[in-house]
Length: 483
Image 1 (cartoon, rainbow, N blue to C red):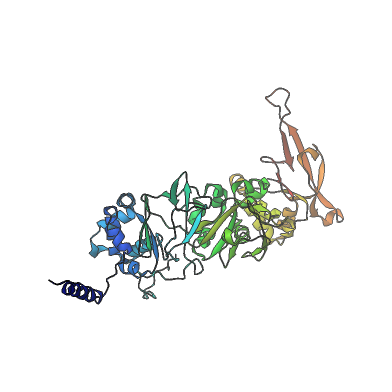
Image 2 (image 1 turned 180 degrees about the vertical axis):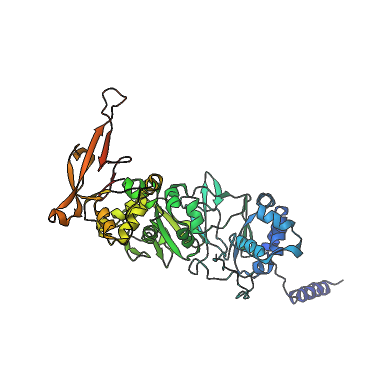
């Protein structure tokens, strides 16, 4: 064959090849999952929850993917995969979807693991407060579509990652501690990244559940009424700054005693409202120096921030950015209350000391000013409910002048502490008698001292007023209470 003819044949074949369309290939998240035998269970979950089309439609994505072993250890997902498809309940499907969305970002990370400390990501999980009772109305969009809105004021739930000792972790706290270790190195596809992890990431629960599970908030958990806990569970978009246990321990004993009683619900609601804010969520990245946050009760909390510390109304931020399904929690070192604002009156102490019958009688006789005036000073001789029940003691009938006179006889003006009381002395009471020319009725005092069983130690003083003995030690408050 002549060279010219050979050249013409080669040239003709190149021209023909250049006219064929070029074929391009892309690698999706589904491709990456399918290529790895460690993700067979995860693929089954995505298929059952109808999230494969969702993944394919994402223009950029990052998937923190639990391995087969991780799913095997997570009972909810493992049990779900064992159900026949005909028995799957839609609300279970929804819970599985939302947990899966918490593993997915709708953008591709430029690199992983983090190199500059704790990194914060925004996931496709938009938590919502369940409708009670469940509504029969159709959802506003297909359930496999991440729908903005929800209980974080239109923000999606956040997720953190960090590196410790050369190992990458996800779902870490604000300081990069705890979390779930990665199981595989990142694998990249076309506008996507797949990162294998050792455990399933559980989406954060409600503020109420987070508070119950925080050891440093155990005192607050114990004293908050259930109605207040319910509000912290269902109220969307809250930022709360809650005092740790040591802050409450600095309160006077009688104040704590009142807060621990069943009569303090209204005050506890007010206290929580003074430590909670609605509106744009107060993540620490938004707590700028010299800014103020308005609480639900209307007071303003001053923020002071440096490179190392953040204080709120002068109280140090301890645990930071604890994510919840309906807000964010910070713990603080002190109560965020104006000085003197937590000053319960004598009536509240009487209720806390199990003297509710005595208080109800004061109310029925229009004598509440004796125990509600925080500036008044009385020594109150208050019979406890259990003592009245055991002894069968009683007061005159309600609505009578005899009852009013009897109640006033239990109030001695001034603060008569144990060391001031002398045996055989007479103390004027609040009861003014017409027969005494406008003078006050008096009450005799008895004081005796028991012999101590320990050498060199003084015995205990026992007090009597009008022949009635005092139970226990007097309770110091705004007024002095003898039970």
